[in-house]
Image: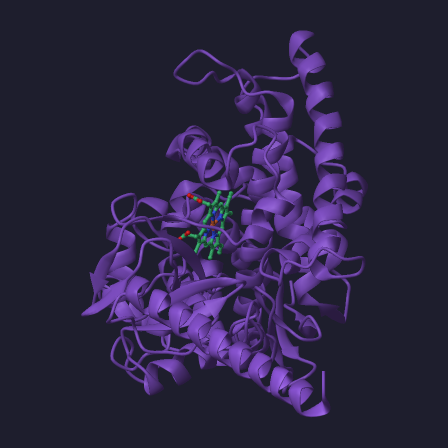
Length: 484
Ligand code: HEM
């Protein structure tokens, strides 16, 4: 072949390749167009695979999780915008209308969905999805969280609170609040779910839990050292420990050394489902792990922010103090808190509600579209992941005038408009631990204000949201014990 022929040959090959590639591209674009509905919500999907996950996670880690939402609500639509999170096409539903839509279409247009990372951290022993598991949990919990049972816990919560303050706060000049709040809520959960009371056992058991929360909403890369990898390892350690506790409890129940009503573990071991089947050990371990996680970091974040706001707002502190001292003074020496006392803590609960408005422990949750549907005039394709976010209403001046102002009176009378205040979610999937959380927060508030007034040691301490909000240094405070 002459050099001219060679050049011609390569040129025609090049032209053929260009033609082929452009035809392929046209075909792909056409195919995608013909499959994608016309009127998707506005927004951007960001980088391949990562989508906008980095912005989503990093605004939280910088302490402004609401920024991700509000920037996009302003730029695209105040009702719904498109994005891509944790490897999935997603739409973020905003405002009271978005919350209402998701909460009232549960199991009709949407279902619960957890990021893939959650299914890996909590692989079910039954090989069902976490969706199925959470359905079972919902059936199981009311027995344990029913009013008669909750009323019994108040005295136990008060006893543990007193022990907690004796060991962690009394006679101290300074404390770091967040680790103590975690110790308190975890101690309660260990006692009420598993009858573990020994503080040393509780402390040993608590360590691996710290790794789990930050792995749940993380980019699911399972390599040594990633938060996701640490969370998987930690959940295996806990499950092993739980199985040992369950085995021992079975023996104790059979030999009458444990009571059928002493805690949720006995309840789970002895309660059969509609087909007369009892749950197996692995399944119970998974359920209790879910409860320990669900109830541990959320309530301790709420408690930490109660302490933070009470330090910053002395007039609010004084009102809470007055309410709690009236209750304290009405009791005989050594008498524990009871249900009637909790009902009298109206103002304190309004304060806690306002704290959870400004610092919602859970930022939001995912759902999955189980059908194509239209929301706010936009098409949502089946399979898309949908996210509701507490902040899209909690800090919205249309829902809460002067949203940055701390004002517990918002919760007086009829309280906030429906679907605007959603720290516990809403609809059929609303947090089943809400009442339990109310009790533990109020019991804590009673015990802390009775003993101390306090001031923040780091007035400008940053807040990090990962995935729960926490003060960056754990909220160190100087304590001033009340004179006896
Ligand atoms: C201040 C404390 C708490 C807050 C703010 C909170 C908030 C939430 C939220 C927003 C959800 C998700 C709802 C959704 O998917 O839309 C949820 C679910 C859940 N919470 Fe809580 N929670 C708290 C305490 C607790 C406690 C103490 C327990 C257990 C004793 C608990 C157990 C659960 C469980 C098991 C679920 C999953 C329910 C399901 O998937 O159907 N939570 N919580």
